[in-house]
Length: 393
Image 1: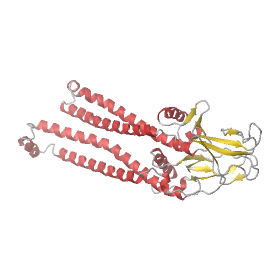
Image 2 (image 1 turned 90 degrees about the horizontal axis):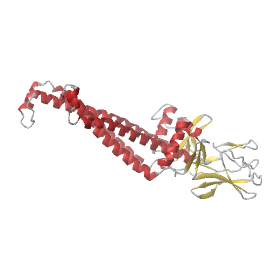
Image 3 (image 1 turned 120 degrees about the vertical axis):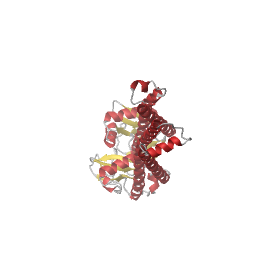
Image 4 (image 1 turned 135 degrees about the vertical axis):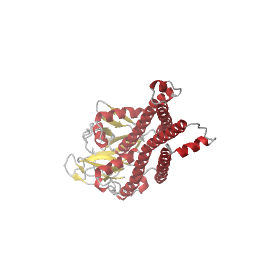
């Protein structure tokens, strides 16, 4: 509802293309630079006047810049997924930037700058009010209808629970979503969701693909490393060098040319290995997030309340609650976990599942229930604790 899905898909493809182009040309440029430096004995004048030197310099600068931009874009897309999940879980339609700063671990200023950018590029259906430090969700506006005079009253952040026209507190809660009204029901039945309700489609397929890519990357690193060590061992092997010179298909007529070829090959392999190491780390991180998403979905499906404490999260991948929450946060950002977000209650960060309000009036005094955040609510009028106001969707 809050993501520009088509644009994000195009941006993801663009980022992959940029990363591939940048890495390929960066490997060629760096290996070429090192080869020229070794071949010309690090002579600055000769090196700078080589024919390919300007191209190598260009890609040595352009390659990292392209990588930084692509990775920055990917990080922003992940944050957009996180904000979207938080907006989906909101019940009032008004969110403070300070709330978002708490659950993201960023400063309010950084969150505000992101929301300004995201409204133009990655997200929709919200208005960021800089001066008030508020986010108004245009696709989800909480409202009340007065049973006495029939007036519609928007539930803003400082809503008093009283009709401003006839001063009646006999209100019925409503929510406006995607242009349609639906009344918040007073029934407590909450159907149990299946585990796949909380995960992205094709999660297991992604897991298999990530594992295959990880294995291929590791195999390529081992092959290149073994190949390089074999070449290094032959650098001073006179019998090998002599056999290369005597071989007419090799077209190498001196030991110096063979040495340059060995150095060039080893340098290229080392740079490729250096480029593959971040890929391996990234694959391991994604596999970890996919596994956590799968484990969490089973836990979430079994819960009857819409809030899961950090201590209840699966501990197979991380022993401490902080690390578990960190992996869950990354899983949400990467889009592997859905219909859940983070919320802070009583100073504790918890995972909030998709939820709904099932009570709109205090059973003791009949006052309208407003400003609901947690599953239990204290009536603003009589002070009674009302149980299970918010339940799992």
